[in-house]
Picture 1: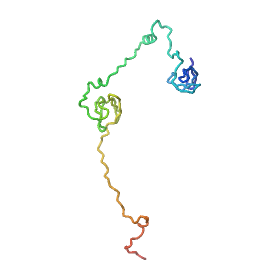
Picture 2: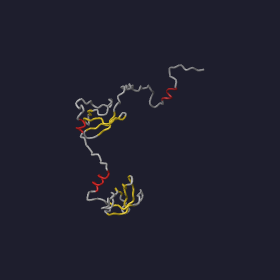
Picture 3: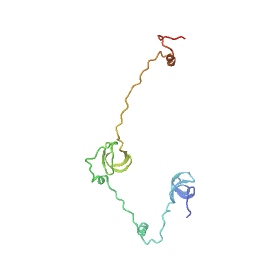
Picture 4: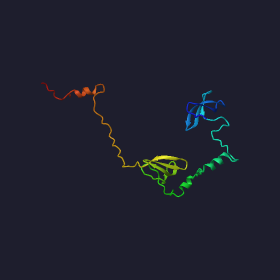
Length: 188
């Protein structure tokens, strides 16, 4: 089989035309074709080989067993079984009753249990600088911590001082330059 590359052509099943037609390769992940464009209808879709065709290698020495069984037994390495631990099981050994309320001013550590006002009880799974990941029953969120520091003083409010001005129809600069009426004028 020739090596495929982006921009090349391949026969694939078109989801719009419902036929196996020539397609242009748009994207690849490693050596596998990911997205294609039908040369007939110009529809973009995920790559689907011709019906009945497979990209898995065929083994000619299958002695009545399934290809999966022969592949896993011949490789010698078995995949680890996926174990799902429920939220309750993860909280089992932790002190949930004395969980502090979340505050962005406090600092938290991994495996610490917190009480959040919106999301409920959760436990810290990762800490990165001033942010941490916390797992709740329904989701994992990223929150901030350690932002307490010294309390900052609010600036004192001072309203603007109204300046005494002359009539609104006279410009202020002319009034400032003119001498006052009762001030003595020096002639000289």
